[in-house]
Figure 1 (spheres, helix red, strand yellow):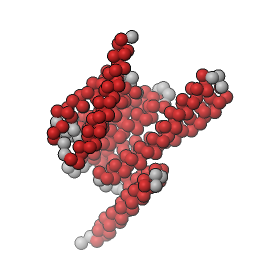
Figure 2 (tube, helix red, strand yellow):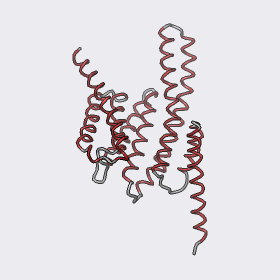
Figure 3 (spheres, one colour):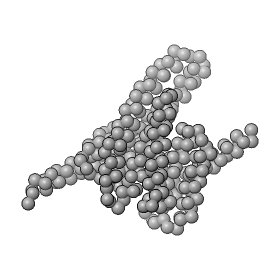
Figure 4 (cartoon, one colour):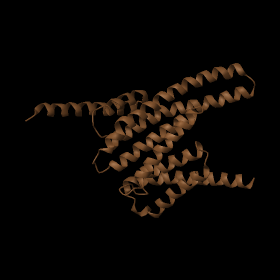
Length: 262
């Protein structure tokens, strides 16, 4: 019997559980930079497939770490515009420099998670025979689309268009898997979350409210039709995303109607 292999597996499990514990601890302390350090180590363990819990930790860690910087960028951009409007060029230049620092941080962290997804997590799922392989693949491709979308929010041309194209490709791949033969049910939270984020991409990045509305409406209508198939476990998540889809639809269709009326 090959005991060395048994010890390798035990070592793997110990390292894995250690990473998960550290990530959870950092999350509780709201120290998201340290949370993603632990998660990078977790993703670096050879050939493992992340559990749903681990996958969600990865999503939460990066979302919070990037989210604070996205918020900083929006605030700085608004302040920069305000100073320029008032003719305070010196102040505006200082804010521009500060904003550039935030952009460098965003570039680095987005590139990092995109690379982890493309080089490790997505390829592993392409070889996977697990029962939830389709859901996990949709989750990862959607996540890739999200981080390309974040890059396109602040990049100047042609980087903005390049990131936008890659975001679109990732979302399309996720949608193809989600709606395929062995895909996800229309009421599945991951499929609904994909429709929500992809429609936001069409509206905010592609400036195509018609396509955004069509995608959001289709996802909402298909989910409503099959609402009775929802289990208790995913009911809350699914209905919350459906509400967000409906809120966006209400806002976007109202804006479209106003534009047509002008």
